[in-house]
Image (cartoon, rainbow, N blue to C red; front, side, top):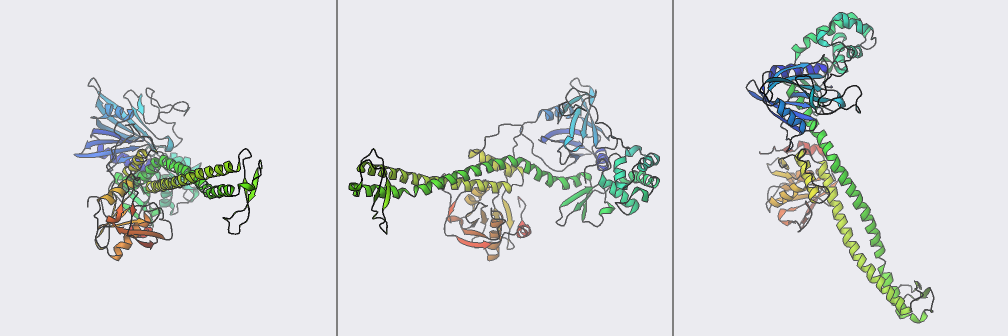
Length: 582
């Protein structure tokens, strides 16, 4: 469900109970649309995450550890200046809607206590976070809204903060049966739609749950309950719901989170679910992986464009080089014509543009027509053909070399595209980006406000049923390192003739079962993962060499044996994945 006003009210209660009176220790900005405030309250260190990401704007306590840029943004520095060391004084929700205000009391430059307010507005792509001074003026905001963007309300430093225009809805904390009944009477039809239209902060999903609890049918109509009965029930429901707090996720068949709610919804009773002790834990479980995948997708988009552009360039270049190679294959014709002219110069009429000569190189001896330069003698024409032959022969040799280089570059770029698709965190993405910079496909980023000091990523570490460790590289850096550091007697694997991961089986003589598992991993973590059958080569690591000057991830190998396997995602999911450091 969306982050509606009702869900936000449960988070507000949790923040009020947990953070009020706490001290602000540190403020960081891991992403341009995300702030994390570290506090010390009730004897514990806590982290408050505030995000205005259009797809998942939210606020909650978090246990996630984020890496921040090397240099903070202006907004982050202002937050630190005004809030760091301050006391979390209060949190309130405005009108039951998706607006939360946090008061933090801190001393100014003169030592006087001043109250600053963080205002979070959760409004989809219009979400924003503002730091407001004690006099009601905006110190700064994560998103600056000028009159070019909105004629209704500007959000700029120095301007007075004004809340968004109020909706014509009733606030849950001031709701009366009479007022709501009057509104419901003017909204005939589905009761859930009427609840959502009349009560501030109630999403259609929350309204369907209210309808289900009243009528036993989430699609029930207003006239099935009467406006008075529906209004009385809603007032009681909204008053009592905070006593039902039990943060809950709805799960799909694979156990992945589909939806979240502050307490179990009876209309979802038949679905698989998981409960949590706090709203923060539930929100982390729902958003952490989802947010990571979305951000990786966003940050890899530019790299995808660079790789696709260079792949397209290489494919065009390869086509032209192959055409030149085919043209160069006709260079023998020049030599033959030159020799025939030398041998049959007597048959050439002076000033003739062409001549028919007996071709004793042809099996049937059929005559061949030879084009002539009318300004040249027969012998000079023969020499002209010999020069064309030498030039074409040299071009043929160069074209063959260029075709080989272009094919190697294309193989490398396709491998990098495959590596990019396998990235699951920023460290892995950063390693691919840095390699593309080193190889000259990207310019280095020197902006310290976007650069992060990330820990090196680690390869996949699987453990076979017999206890054998199997290591799978995620990118060229890891592939090179795995192959370089593996024992000479270890088994090395790679999908044959296609980009993919280097796989190391850490044992001298792997069992057949372990060998097949490793082959499945090599096939799955390759460009052929969607193929019906993938050839996988394996050999001892001592037979794998990296040529001097070769691109990252490129090796040559001998003494290989080939297995044929069908990549299977379930086999990979069932394989035992070892946590880093174990």
